[in-house]
Length: 291
Image (cartoon, rainbow, N blue to C red):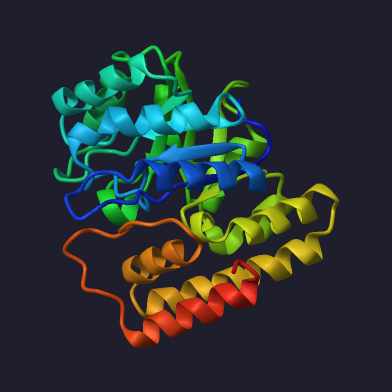
């Protein structure tokens, strides 16, 4: 089980050919660990798991694992649309120094609960690593429900779920189905409220470009300063919303560059950032004290 605290879904810096810029990624990992992250997720939503070339997968896992060195948990996204494709990624993860793998439901084919349960059971059986579900209905069009989880609790290496469903995560936290099952909350606008309900493991991709701020939030939580945590979280969400207004991908990528992480952190077909977007991102990160 993870320590209590924040996990960061890392951004993935790419060069013009689509290769991962390893030094930039490793610096990001080091900065997140220094900020107090209890876990890092590679190839999540902000990490463009569906965009990074397969040829970069193993190299990227190894590069980050070398930096992490057991100082925090390292999770690898392995989402795909068939068990055959999942198997290829899980085979790599099984050979590398990662602590767990993370899977969403298939995001191309709409299917029913029985097929989703079968998909996760089969995928979990393909790896000795700890196995985590990623509930991301806006992208996958599938909802992982409490009923589904209860049916999957017999899978021995199923160790947790990441979800923005506050009701689901609160229930799993306060009424654990299994002692070794870890709920991780990803509803960033409600992190402070969730913490008050005992939900003390939370994850977001925006932390990648706000390491000083999320570190400040966690330190407030640790000393019982909920008002301080709430205030900083509100400021972070205001900056995030400004970035969304000008396009989250170009502003996130530009923000990461401002923090000293070279590379393109957006899908390669994204339009470039506007002058107004640059100004807003610069001002927001400066207001947070990130630069």
